[in-house]
Length: 163
Ligand code: KFV
Ligand code: CO
Image (tube, rainbow, N blue to C red; front, side, top):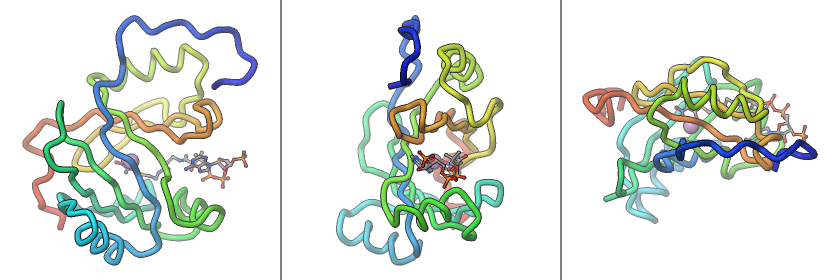
């Protein structure tokens, strides 16, 4: 998974508590939201624009997920010179990243960073619904852009305030 490095140390406890979301790059958010609602019955839980990440996003709730909520995150780029804009130009629409829930993102970053996986964010940034997020380099995770998500306290989540 990480090339020719020495065997990785085993982390003492599972760092990831659940799959928080799968992020999907799309060209048109409204059309894609409508598709996920009508074809799959997913529920639009939240919508926001994240200038720092260069995306307009919609959070589709997967009903009745155990151990905390799980989501599909639809991502329309705010411009061509953004991570999702470049991804769409290079690969077209499709799965862009996977986000894992963690209890303590600062501790998780320290632990994962110590294994040699490159951290795209050494400190957490602002994510969906008030979460703290940080990305790991896809080249060190078998080609998968991987995001850590420490959810905000419950009162900040899925309140539809940004719809
Ligand atoms: N998955 C796997 N590989 C990817 C990738 C992806 N989504 N995007 C780019 N790459 C690969 C690409 O194939 C290429 O590999 C290399 O990364 C550089 O591509 O083997 P290669 O050919 O060298 P570039 O230059 O086209 O990509 P660039 O965008 O400049 O940099 C890639 C990367 C991963 C460093 C950058 O996209 C990044 O920093 N991403 C993290 C931020 C992000 O993706 N934000 C949007 C989602 S915001 C979000 O999820 C939120 C707000 N939230 O709360 O959940
Ligand atoms: Co995400």
